[in-house]
Image 1 (cartoon, rainbow, N blue to C red):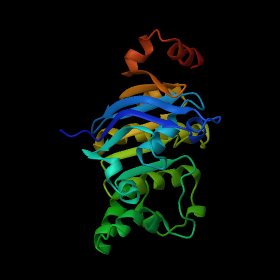
Image 2: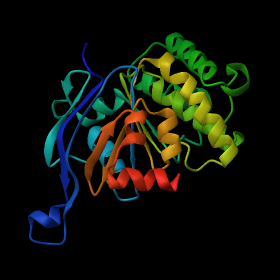
Image 3: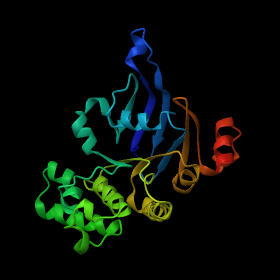
Length: 248
């Protein structure tokens, strides 16, 4: 079976380094594979390379080393805009268009892909129900009429709208209050097994990572310092792993 994502020797070096300036490696020699139905949590401190790795995967940044393969196709061989339409992307700030209704926000990528209106409408209803929002009550609302947790649910629905094989999530619950965050973590955990998507979930919260991850990848100073299952993470003697576990 084709993997949802393959990352091979991925690296990103700031231009200044190559020109004799103050640049340096933000990501160096990172490799991993994510299968359909698997959630790889990239855990690490601020500045460890987690978000940079996500941006390299969907070509918001261009790798200076290595390659990314999405659903069997080299990312570098696909126009960047087309690639991003094949990858669901959920960020902390959500990024909903304020002048679009929930229905228009969720249906954006299918509309750009040329889906017929009836198919888009059906997909929007399906996904709103999936993320716990009644389509009849929420489809016509605008983002400012929603709570933070509701907006994040809409963001997840929008990322899934065109049925991409891969979902990238960059600290999606980080800006929420603690109670809403726990609620959404539990809802997301229930969704994981039903979606059959490859997912890469970035967080600096070790408890969140252990709850949601099929595997944990610990980033440290731009490198993948550890890669394994949550039980293997708990048993690891790696110094950076121990620091995260002690902090939890």
